[in-house]
Structures are given as structure tokens and as C-alpha cells.
Amino acid sequence: MNPNRLLTLLHPKLTRILLAPVFPVTTGLTIKDTATPANWTVGAALVPSKQTTGTNNPGVATTSAYNRVPGLALITRVKNVSTFGGNAASPMVCWATGQNGSDVTTMEGLAWVINFCGKAIGESLYPSTRITATADTYFRIALVLRGSGMWLIVDDTTLAWYTSAGTNSPLYGQVGGLGASRYPPDVTYMRVAQLSAPFNAEYGLCTAALIGARSAGETFTHAADTFISFTVTTLPTGANTIDLLFRIQDATNYWQVQITATGALTLNEIVAGVSTQRGTTAAAVTAGNRVVILAIGSTIAAYTASTARWTYTSATNFATETDGELDAIGDGVVTTLTTAPRTLTAAAQAVLAQV
Image 1 (cartoon, one colour):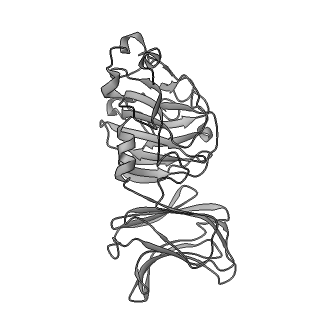
Image 2: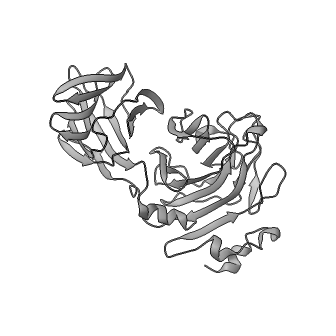
């Protein structure tokens, strides 16, 4: 990269930044857009970005729109300032189709609530990522686009959530308050970069990726702390069920998620062949729903349509096991089963650390 070209993107007051140590560019990494204000607040100029208008006001957005490409990342260091007040679901770091963020259906990203909450395109709900969004604390947030959806990463190490909905393009990077009467976050910098492997592949962060229609009896692997995601394209009928096993120790010791013909979603713990129900929600799954299981340590939670369905916090058995199986689907249809680790691999962390 020509450093003079990068300097032309910056406000004159920012040209004193020493680019080499701040942006250690290596093969496969391209910095596309950057701005580093000193403690940005309302009224400050952020070049090459701009303050937003509309209901997501005030905020800051990239001047340029970017075509959706796997591995394109918006990376920012930001904190929620408690003295600003009015911070419900605010601030929010997102990719959006416009610079004013006025239409939440076209925004996807990470919002501060009590916990960080992920948001997919076309969804208005915010499933908890089970990461505390501590006030007055800087977090480094990376939103890395996929061909459909994105990876949402906190502090270069933790996969907070990943979405599979959303193919909107082009997109603006944005930090702001979600909704009316929000106050600005404290933003140290905002950068856009094209990341190399594993981020530039659609399923690059996945431990397992079984794409398309799946069959009963298929096995997969997952990290001990993991996301498991699959789509219930068609619910089973009658007495048939969809049975997903994970954290399998052996044939009689494992965890099971079961989905019935009525859409009931149940968590069962099987110990020495004996099944004990640990959570259930009636009519939680409808045809076409993406089901996400989040297993972290002794906590197992389930989400459908971005809604938390149950959380079990005493799942100490088999917590280090990494085998899974789609045990049964009956006459239902399950598609695109993926798993992704809660903690990024060292290789993935190293790529983010370059930006």
C-alpha cells in the first residue's frame, strides 16, 4: 500500500499518526478506510467519516459504501459512556445500507444492552451473546462480513455471535445510538479492512460446516465452548422428531436438543442412558427458522428467530466433549448445520491483531 494514498484519506490534524506501527500491513490485509479522532464526541469532525443524521443521531459513518465481500471488516474501539444517558440498545456498531441508520431492518451488528446483543438484517430482536457490555469500558468490536450475514467479534478473541441472514450491498460502516434520543458513544477509531484467511471464506471460522440438506446419522465436531447453528426447513410430522446430539461422551452420555412436530424445543441431558429434561419451550420453532445453540462452560442456551427460548446453567456434565451427531430428523428437513468456536483460533486472532 502507498502510505501517501492513505494519508490523503485523513483529516490534516490526523496526519501525524505513525502509520507503520498503527497499521502493520501484511500479505492479505488491506486497510481501506481509517479515522482516529482523539476521544470523539458530538460536534467533532471525523474524516473520512461523517456524523449521521436521522433517528440514529448522533453517530458516525464511513463516507464510502463498500460492496459485501467475505472478510471485509469494520473494526472500532468504542465504549458506552454512562453519563450520556439514554443508552438502551445503544451504542450500536453496525453495517447498514445507509449512513443515518434510520431503518433498523437494514442494519446488522452489535448493540450494548445489559449484555452485548447481536442483530441480523431483517430482525428487530437482539439475542444476548452472554458477554457483559460493561459501561465506561472500551471494547474493540470487529464486524466481519460473510456472503450472507457476518461474524461479530469482541476484543479480537471472542465470537459473540454470527448471523446467516443479510446479503445487502453496498454497506456503510457505522457507530451510533440505535433509535431516537440516543447519545453518542466514545469512539477512539473506526477502520475498514479486507481480512485474509480464515475470514475471507464463507465458513472460514467454522469448526464444521455441513451445507445443504442433511441426513440422519451425520456426525460433526465442535469446540467445547461452541455455537451450533442449523435451519429447520421443514418440521417433522406426527411422532417424528429432530434430534441433535452434542457434547457426546459415548453412546449413553450426551446432551440432546429435540424438536417436535408442534415446534416444541427441548434440552435433554442423557446420563447412563437416562434422559432428564433441562429446558423446553412450546411452539418455539416454525418452518424456516434458524436454531442456534450456545454452549459455554456449564451454560447451554437456545435461540430461534433471534429469541432466547431457554437457558440452563448447570450443564457441568460432558462440558469438554467435542463430538456431535444429527441423530434423527424423521420426515423433517434440516439444512446447513454449522459449528463455530466461542474463542477464535490463534491464527484468526493474529489476523485481527494486524488491523
